[in-house]
Every structure is written in structure tokens, then in C-alpha cells.
Length: 403
Image 1 (cartoon, rainbow, N blue to C red):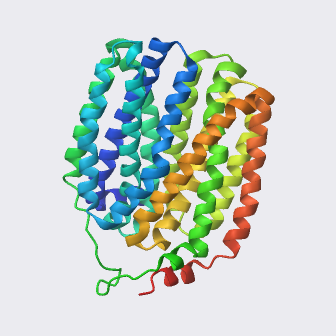
Image 2: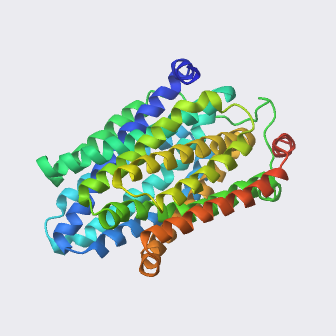
């Protein structure tokens, strides 16, 4: 019930939520269409892998820039501007007619990914400015629900749109979603805070003090290590459907829908996540590892669906916990910068992990690789436990807020 109470009270956040939901679904629709278009023009699976790699590159450079811009300029204006710029860019895909235009797909993908790299840290750093601190856990739960709905609705809509109405319709729909998102962002009132939380004095936080903080170092360590396993996860979902259980594209759709359902279910548990968030983070990551151990021995496709729902359920809960801790500890005026650098690191590592999964599957069977991923998650929990035990969050927050 607390989740719905927070939703009703945070009317300003509701516009940001629906904007993220709508443009996320639109992006998923056009992503599926891009994959289909590339395969039609080239007949190469490698071309799809290359476009995924192209999507990751801008985050390394532009996510930190986006975060720094979010700390210096109006977050609302940045989000609104990016959404408007994305409309003509995605509509440019309509110009692709034959295999001689494949380079244009890669260029447009790069530009869209660059704009997204600016958008993501700005949006994330805007949330603490919009909602009360005691409701952050509920709002982060809603963010997980949004991820799940985008995954389920976007994937289904993308397939239906491309199959029945053609690829061009998918790109037009994405342009419309960016327009709707911009209109919703225009209704959001995001305070442009030039002062610290006390409201009187400016916040003077040295870069050395910021980056030497034990809390910041711990958060970055998680941003580096978790994508190592998550990237392999993404590849294994498709491989389990296509190779292990031989269910074809239909199986891929069912397993990705299971991923989305897990995130949606995790969002419903915010009322149980009130205290000891770091301990809960470790616990849920350990359960995530256990889920992968189970996935390595599941006897049937239907059982795999339930296990994958469980994996993303506990994974979503760990995301909710650690995101809430970061939003409470990191000073609001530095969150754009920190989240930007984290996005750069995590997306780069995620891309490398996804690329390495292909090579690992040449050495290990999918079940063996799932077992390795499960062991990796459990090993991470040991490292995180050691780091968390040394953290005094109250002291860390006080030090970071020193004027």
C-alpha cells in the first residue's frame, strides 16, 4: 500500500515516470525494428552484434558529460531538449532503403545512444529533487516496475508493429513516443538547486574528497563488477530459448517477458524494504546467484521461465536497495556527475561482458556458463559484505555534505 500512497502523493514524479515509460517502449520498438532491418539488408548476425557494440560506445564518454551538465544546468531543459532531438534522428531511419545505406543505421544508432547517454544520468539525478527522501524506496520500486513494463510491452509491441505494419511504422511510432515524452517532461517541475540541503550556503566539495570517499569507491566497485555477470545473463536468455530448449523466437519472447515480470513483481515489495538496505542488497544478490545455479539444472522450458522470473525479481530488489542508498548518501548537487560516471563504467563493462559471452559459449555449454555466473554472483556477495561492513553511511554522508 505504501507504494501506491507514494505514487499518489508524488504527482510531480508521475510525469517523469510516464515520460520514461513511453519513450522506453518507443526505443524498444525501434530497436527490434533496427535488428530486423539489419538482418534483412545483410543477412548477418554479426551486423546485429556490431550495432549493439556501437550502442555501448557513447556511454563511455558522454554519460559522464551528461551527469556534469545535469549538475550545472536545468535538468528539465536537458531532458526536454534530448527528447526533441531524438525525434528527427530516429525518423532518419526511414531513409535507409538498401544495403548501401547500412552505414546510416550505425550512424543513427550511435547518435541515439549518445543522446540516451546524456538522458539517463540526468533523469536519475532528477528523482531525489522531485520526491521526499522517505519515499525514495517506493519511487525506486516504481522505477523497477517501469523497467519491467518497458521490457514486456516494448518487446511485444515491437514484434507486432514490425510484423504487421512494417519497419517504417516502428520508427514513426518511436518518433511519436519521443514527442509525447517531451510534452510530459514540460509539465515536470524539477527544482534547479544551486544551494546545499540546508538552503543557505553553497556546497564546496573538493574533487579529492568526493572521489576518495569509501562510499563512492564502494558504489563504483559495484558498478564495475555486477555488469560482468549481467552481460552474460542477457546472452544466456536467448541461448537457453534457442539452443538448450529449442523453442525458437517464441521461446526468446517468453523468456524476455519473464525478465520483465520479475522486475514488475520486485516493485511490489517496497513496503518490506525499509531498513538494513545494504544487508538486503547482499542477500538478494546471493539469491540471484542461487537462481543461476538452479537455471543450470532446470529440466524444462516452463521451469526455466519461473527461475528467470525469480532471478530478475531478486535482482530488481537489490537494484532498488542500492539505488536508494546512493540517492540518500551522495549529495544531490553531485549525483548527476556520479551517476554519469557510473553509467559510463557499467555500460562499458556490460558491453564487454556481452561480447565475451559469445567466446565463452565456444568453451562452455550454456548450462556450464550459467553455473559459472551463479558462482560469480555469490563470490561478489562476499566482496560486497566486506566492503559494506567497513562503511559508516551516517559518517560518509556527513563528510560528503561538509561545507
